[in-house]
Every structure is written in structure tokens, then in C-alpha cells.
Image (cartoon, rainbow, N blue to C red; front, side):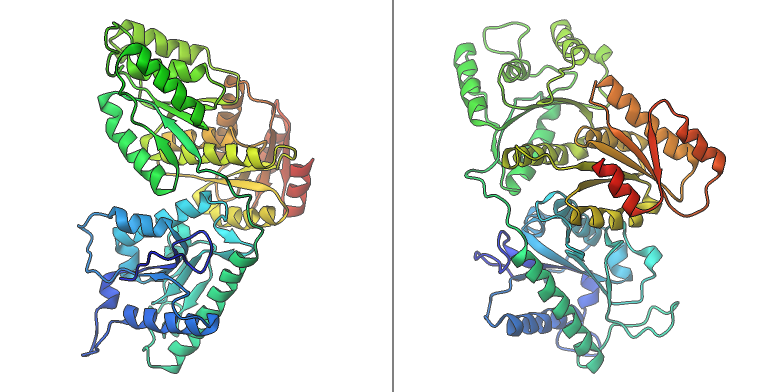
Length: 488
């Protein structure tokens, strides 16, 4: 396993490259001394070092422990992925079947999507797909869609899986040189890209007290945020005494750029000497009195009828019925798995506003079904090159999760584009209706709606139905028309 306390060659990361692979693919064959993956790592490391011209300059992380599917995805590997600039996925049948490998890929994909560098630098993906076998494109994980597959196998026919090239063969050496050149070009993109404005301090978050039922979620979220270098204050109370507690919270809130409060049907710990006033509630109230932005989060499944404490129930009802019009206050009914990402998205929006207060960047939601995601990725790259910030909202299996993600994205963008490709008219119509209902209920400013036509042929009656909706919906079928709509 490689690791280092030094910085990577690419600024801002601990590792230049993370190698993700199935350990069975590194088992030595035919009395070989080393496994294929280890040989691949050694040869690639040497080629990159020679090209850079400095020994040890390139930091590559690869895990040589024997892990299997029953072992926990440990925090050390998770942290290493999040600190890596590039990931190389050594794709094989074993890789696709390994939940551990898929977790590594999903973790990198998720963190890259929300980082300032993004998933793509110009047209180069930070995910590099090395094909140890001839894996059909249709079997690639969604995170690999849009990447270029580097063929390291001897398959001759489309339906033949083939075997990885022998590491001593000319074919292996030629492929490795091509991979090296692609990595060097990607590294150059990192080196020459416009550097973001540096912050004087880490982004600071005050994380309010919670009930026992939310304590594990809070602990997990705080740990994930700290791993991403957020400065999180989450240890109040103590003090427990009412006045000392209030004074402490106010002081902590002054130092925070965002406060986060998790509330469910249970009010939490009662303030010492006070009946029917609880620490989570009090901290939320104090936060609402401050100018700093707030995120107030409740679980999607929360029902007010299940709340037994009447005073606390009234408090939650007031939050719900008196939704703040101030954009700095966000009330979200969410799912636990999305909480960290929602906090990161909000912090990113706030930091962007601090950097560029005078020029608002065009933001757009690309709402797409999984089957049309490849189109969305291509359009996304084109928009980024034109200075437009896209957010891709793929269709997930859980309908509730879809709506939650859709609502969260809508709050961040000025225009919405719905991809009409391998889906029915009714699917697109329901997505648009959900977006409209959310905009109206939250009293958001008017947003532009657009339908992007993709193959296959669409019924003329369906298209005319969209044109007759009570809000204007632009229908386009090419990227130039889309960009005109977004900049209008």
C-alpha cells in the first residue's frame, strides 16, 4: 500500500491517483512472482516518474491488502479516495460484481461532482476506465458512462471477454504508454486550470444539538464533513445552564458561516431548570435570530401527529406553516443518505456567492432519466465550457428520493431542462409538474422551463400538449438552441 504525508504533484490533493481494483485480479498466475495489478502499478509509476523527471513526485495510492466483500469499507480508504485527484478503475467481471469496488467508484464520483475542479477538466474525465476484459458498454456502471475505455485485453471479437495482456508483451507496453500520455495530459489540465480564489479559513459550520434518535446521523455527517476539511462546531451543550448555554451558542453562531439543525418527532434533552424547552429547539431559535444562513432538516417520514410533546409539536408546526421567504434559511424534508451532500451543496453556493458577488453565473438543472444520462453528461461538458454551471439530476430507483433530489436542485438554479429521450411523455410531464408545485409552494422566483428532445421519434400530439401548459416551455433539439435559451 502506498501512502505519504507529503503533498501530491497536483495541488490540493494528497494523492494524484487512486487505483481501484478487485483483489482477485491481482492473484499471481502460472507461478508468477507478482500479480497483474502490482506489475501494472509498478510499470505505470515508473513511466510517469520518467515523464515528470522527478522521483517520488507522483503519488499513487493502491491497496495491497486482501479485502473481500464481507469487510467494512473502512474510513482510511474512504479518506484516501476523497483526497485523490484521479481514479483508475481496473474494470473486469470481478470488479463489476464487487460491492467494495463499486463503493470506491461511487465515492470518488460523488466527491468529484461537488468539488471545485468538477468531474471533467475540459473534456477529460477524472475517472479513467482501464478494461482488463472486453466489458460491453451496456454493463458499465453509470459512473463510467462518458469515459474513454483503455483496452488492456486481447479480445478480438465484440462478444469475447478476452484476457488481460501479459505484462511482458509489446501490447501491454504500448497500451501503458498511451495511458501514461492520457494521465499526463489530465495532470496538465489540473496544472493550467484557472485557480479558484483561496479562502482565508475553512468553511465553518455550527451543528446544533439533536435528539438521541438523530445522534448517530449527526455523528456520521460531522465525520464526513471534517474528512472534507470543513470546520465543524458540534459540542454544545455543555454548558447546560440556560443563560450560559445561550451565550455560548450565540458566540459560536457568530463564528459560523452556516448553521445546521436536525429535528425529528423527539425534542431531545430538556434545558436544565426549564420545562418544555429543549436544547435542539432553543439552538434553532437562536440561529433564526442570526444573519447567518441556516439549514433546518427533518426526516422525510416525519409526521406531526406522532409528536407527543405539545409545545414541541407547535414549534415544528410554526416552522412548517411559516416557511421563511429569506433564501438564507432552508427547510428541507430529506433522507438521511443525502444530508451530507445537501450541506456541501449549500456551502458551495455560499462560497461561490462570496467570491463573485457582482456577477451571477447561469445555473441550470439537467433533469434526466438514467437511460438518457449519457446525453446529459455530454451537454453538461459543453455548458461548462460556455461558462454555464449545470447540475445533473439522474433518475434513481426510489421515487421519494427522486423528488427530494429534484427539490433540492431546483432551489439552486435559475433554469430547468428536462430530457425527453427514452422515456414516456407522462414521465416528463410528472417531473415538470413536481417542479412547478415545488416552485409555487416555496414562492420561488419564476424559472425558465425547457424540454430537450432526444431520439427517438416523438408523437406530435405530445409535443403540442407541452406547448399548451400554463407556463411557457421552450422545446429544443440541439445544443445551440439550448444555450440560446439559457442565456436569454
